[in-house]
Image 1 (cartoon, one colour):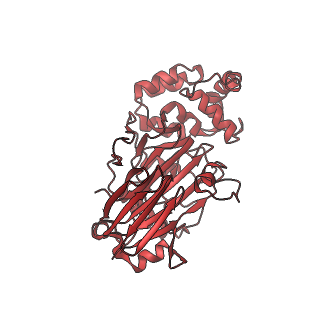
Image 2 (cartoon, rainbow, N blue to C red):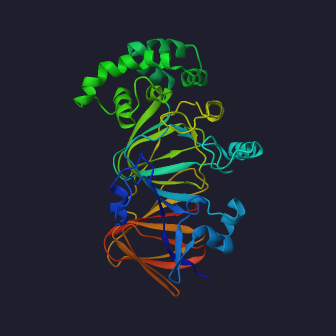
Image 3 (cartoon, rainbow, N blue to C red):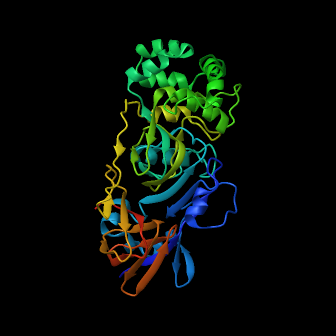
Length: 401
């Protein structure tokens, strides 16, 4: 049986979010000061809604009653839950430095916090579910982020160039990255001031005159202090990470994959994000939220990383699937012109989101027209046709085929 329904996501109004991008993409009126994320999926904390016979139903309830819509291979590997979550993000201010656990670490951490009686909504809780959270992103604008530790030689050069950090470079020469990072993350306020305040003072005028390059870690230290309203008396160890981690510029259409344990932080821009369906975040600075340093140091992957960008979609291919190693999700882009028709079949559940233009979905007794900002849930084993009404493109989340 074919299951195709209009799907409406849920907004997340975190204070780091922008004001206009998501409401304009969705074509909705602004009712909140911040629009950080738009979620499309079946995460229990904020499930999307299906429109069935003129009524809204949470996708979580629908899947619980109709698990076959996930498809046989999805049920075998991931059980009776949609394995992925699709998001649109508008990052106006830097997000916390964070990393995500492996599946085994998540299961152990979740069980341990349950046994300790820590409520799921307790702000000191680290593990919200049993799942890992590998994730990929595709940039919708110029996008900047931190991603993994720089090669050690590069880290030494960056630290040595700054007089107040030169002693750190000498220390790192004789330490492995894990030991070095652990000491940084446990530094007291006096030590952080000694390292950072000379950099802040010497670069303040250059920053205000917009003379610092965005490849320069000093720029992001000054920007983060301003954007997050961090005072020089309450410096954050996460600020040192601009000198330790790769600063990555992802151009519109390109992407990046974040595996378990890799520290990262989104800094600025808009993107599509697709991840395993989890809310397990271990934070490592630049946040007022709970930071569990022992767990962070246990889970962090301190290997040296040379960032590998996901290639931009091939415009000669009407349907293009981005390459990642993920087993829980895949993302395809579908480009269409008026009257373009594609006959497709879903082996597992899919979520289709129209990024631009308008298209029509037809199958058996179903016909849906979706315009920019609208989406559909397509159950497994549905044979359907997509037809472009105008020029545009959509993205589709599904399991790897």
